[in-house]
Amino acid sequence: MLTLGLVFATTFLLLNATGVVTVAKIEIWLTLARDADPLWVAPIIALLLFVDLIISVPTLATITFSGYFLGPVVGALAGIAGLMMAGLGGYCISHRYGDLLLKVVIKEEAKRSDAVATFQEHGAVVILLSRASPMLPEVCACMAGMTRMPLGKFLVLWLASSVPYAAIAAYAGSISSLDNPQPAIFAAIGLMSFLWISWLVVRRRGQKRQG
Image (cartoon, rainbow, N blue to C red; front, top):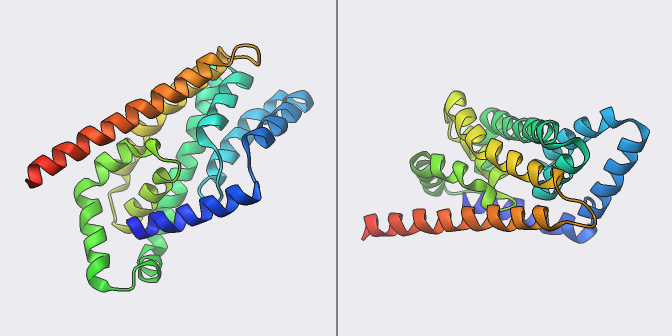
C-alpha cells in the first residue's frame, strides 16, 4: 500500500508543480459555467472529482465551491456523485487489472502478499479515515479492488467516508462568500483536525495491541 501511495504522491507533486488543476482555475471554470448556464455547474463538479482519480484535484476546495455555487443540498449531491464515481472507477479498474498493476508496483511476491494481507485486515478503517490525506482515498479505492474486497462492503465504507465529508464541505461553502470565507476555512480546519486525530487514536490503539 505504501508503494502505491508513493506512485500517487509522485503524480500529485508533478501535477501540482505544473499547475494543471488549481483552486483558482476551478473557481474560474465554475464561474464561467454558472454565467453560461447554471445547469453545467453540477456536472463539472462531479467530473472534476472523478478526474481526481487520475490527476490532482483539490477535493475539499472543489466541494466547498460546489456548495457556494449550488447551495448545500445540490452542492453536496454533486460532490457525493463525483466522489462515488472516482471510488467506483478506482475499485473497478483495480479489480480487473489489479494483479498486473500490483506486480508492476511491487516486484517481490512476498511483499505483494503482505500488502494484500495488511489491507484486508485494516482496510475498513483506512477507507473510513482516508479523507485525512489528499491521495489516500484513491489509493484505498485501488487497494480495495486489488484485494477483492466485496463491492457492497466497499460501497458502504466509501459512502460512510464521503457523505459526511461532502455534506459538511458543501454546507460550509453555501454560507461562505468572498467577504466572509471563514465558514469554509473553519470547516476545512475542523474536518482535517477530526480526521487526523482519529488517525492518531486508531494508530495508538494498534500499537497498544501489538505491544
